[in-house]
Amino acid sequence: MNKKYHIAIVGGGPSAIFAAYELMQYNHNLRIILLEAGHDIYQRSCPIAEKKVNHCIGCKPCDIMRGFGGAGAFSDGKYNFTTEFGGWLQEYISDNDVLELINYVDKINLERGAPTEYFTTEKSNLGKKVLAQDIHLLQAKVRHLGTENNLRILEKLYEELKSQITLCCNSRVKQIQPHEGIFTLFVEGLGELDSIEADYVIAAPGRAGSEWFAGQCKELGLSLFNNQVDVGVRVEIPAEIFEHITEDVYEAKLVYRTKQYGDLVRTFCMNPKGYVVAENTDGIITVNGHSYRDEKKHSKNTNFALLVSNRFTEPFQEPHQYGKRIASFSNLLGGGVLVQRFGDLIKGRRTNEHRLSQSFTRPTLQAVPGDLSLVLPKRHLDNIIEMIYALDKIAPGMANDDTLLYGVEVKFYSSRLKLTKELETEIPNMFAIGDGAGVTRGLSQASASGVHVARVIHQRIVK
Ligand SMILES: Cc1cc2nc3c(=O)[nH]c(=O)nc-3n(C[C@H](O)[C@H](O)[C@H](O)COP(=O)(O)OP(=O)(O)OC[C@H]3O[C@@H](n4cnc5c(N)ncnc54)[C@H](O)[C@@H]3O)c2cc1C
Image (cartoon, rainbow, N blue to C red):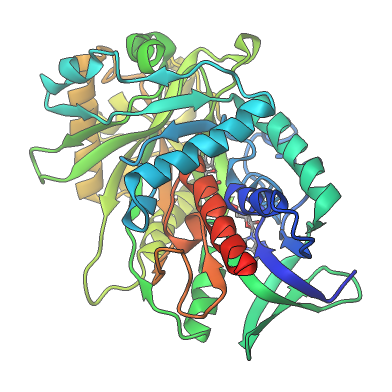
């Protein structure tokens, strides 16, 4: 293995993969190394998904969050074509350019077997219907790859990258040290080498690496801005309740401003006939969801998150920690994810094993029955309850006693770095992309950010 590379990419999620993919297209004979802390795509497996255990046992690294393919590897790959959500890339480059990049990524997925059909809100009158209840539908087009296709496409990309660049999994970057235009990266897991050098660095550490990366940025004197943290629950209901919505647009991004506090609550990551899963971010267990395209693998339930955004002002600097502390309450009480029936929450009582066993809605994740009112701040809980009643008007049955609420779901958005429109940090030739840089929060924009930076580096090299 070489010690000196032209480009070092930190991370192996979609932003990193598409940066590497794009760089490979230019035939510069560049030496590129991609360093991923987690396992390669074939070695990733979650014991819960494989039904070896029924609760999160805190594997290190967590194969859901880390490894080639990144946090999205076991997701059902909902690629959204929009600048309305999924990140803030449009604050750096124009909306049209973001959409061009998203379409480009889509083409790459299609060439590797992504399903050709997509869902769109364009022709739906859902937006008009929900507006009558003061709920707002964000406009979008979405291609749903399905968990199995998403993984297959990642395997293909893994093989393609492996044949052209140095791809190192189980290799965690501990430190990035710039000196006179050269970057030294100290890496754990590279065998006899403990460091490599590179002319360019693309940092793509994702949410799982965001705490480490924020520390790095502070050490390097790079400016960081607070980003929001979204806290809420994952809702699970019988699929019929939302069928008229999910069969129309697949995923509805619905936003509602609560009357009580004037806060925004939104639906997020809708998984028709899907499964609720636990995820582990640096030892904190939170909840998420996914669904298969293959009908044989469908469950009877639909799940989605209901999230309340928190944006903090001075003097508080650590929204990440805020989200973590709330999640740690549910971990403390239940050893992981808690589940509560909506009816029990409203009656102010804990869901216990007995009440859960009586529920008509059967949970797809074996979580500990408990009381979310002991975990979530009152304001969040009130917001979520109000949103559930609002949704009940457009999807009757939503506020049934047996609606299951899993807690907590936290979307940690990394602190945002000060970046140029080329996504370059204040250190020349050091770029930051994807969720870990705080500029994206979804597959499409994360992948798009990787392609964007690869093109910027290409332009510099050809100059
Ligand atoms: C269960 C689940 C379902 C999801 N479903 C969807 C969906 O359907 N649609 C959607 O748009 N989004 C979805 N998302 C979000 C999406 O996966 C992320 O937005 C996307 O993966 C971000 O890409 P990224 O490359 O920025 O970071 P990530 O995918 O998080 O990848 C970062 C990688 O960097 C590695 N890393 C971190 N630090 C280091 C280090 N120091 N050294 C080496 N490697 C390091 C990590 O191990 C990780 O593999 C989902 C997420 C989860 C967890």
